[in-house]
Image (tube, rainbow, N blue to C red; front, side, top):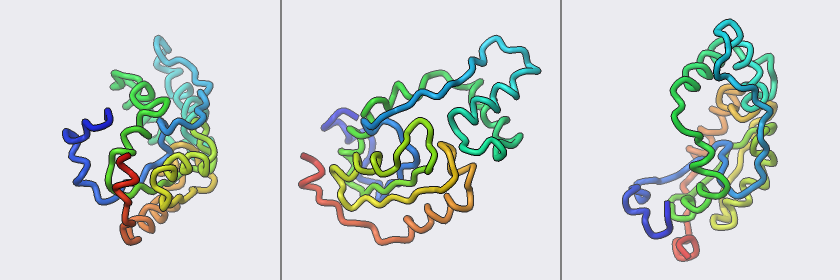
Length: 173
């Protein structure tokens, strides 16, 4: 969202935002060693998706089940854009500075693409010092899938906390 053009996005309706393993914060980004899927024989598709899920989304390959592979295949077929081009390197951070709601974060301990949970939340704390962080142990980028119970606990804990006051004068500079 270009600065000053947030009115079209109804940002005043948000009471709280919880970022989950988000890119676009101007922090280091690693590129996962993905194998290409285009032109692959159907019988090899599941194995390649399993590889790519482990390379980018899951910390523990034993947690990649058939449903995760089905989701990967389903979403991959429908992708019309490269999502990272819409947020990298710092587009999410620029938009977040416009939001008046408090922002907290949930991060996976082993997020391959966006490592170092503390460094990432520090990008948010630069304009929202009260931002809280919950780290999901033993999880990769899809922490909400790989460690669903821990993720749900962290999300519900953050949602149950009082909404922080945000110093709008500082935030909208």
